[in-house]
Image 1 (spheres, rainbow, N blue to C red):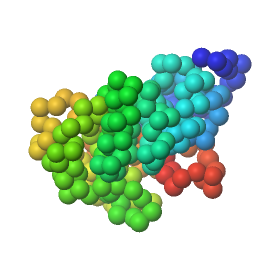
Image 2: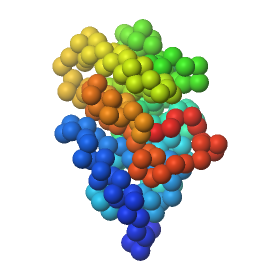
Image 3: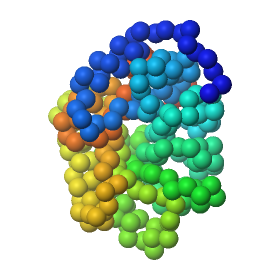
Length: 240
């Protein structure tokens, strides 16, 4: 670690994390979404035991990884461009946003060069909004049945991820999360029945994580409820 931030103290961040933890049942992992946030804020979360953080910009993540404690587990949650994989491939714990076979092949290629197996989630299109990325269930079946996929030895598919619609209708949100859980169950039964590592459902953010937990989330991505609001004019569209 190259940064001494012990003199910073933001009790809001610590209290926010502790309050959220009280709502989370055993078996659900809190990902503190730290994108755009300064390293001192991350260290405040770290100081109360938080070790799993989510970022959506590869180069920003690379810098934070270099500056911050080595035992942080970094999850990449944003849209990943093939030419940016190189910045995170050496250390990333989980890539949530695999949305094509082409991207999966490039992750595998990069992982092989550093002799790693990288855990990944298929990003599923559950909101059916044009502004969002993601695969259909049919497309995932096609990938998993392909000979190209079967040759990928340096990636491991551990589950699915989805981003719900931006809506005030909790019934719509619940419907989409149920869809993601059903997709997970179908994939588990068809392709991963004997694979213990296929166990993750990443869904739920600040505005809808209680519903996500009720519908079977194992990973929830929470940012603004921990760190406060951020300026989205400078970032991508996912509001964690």
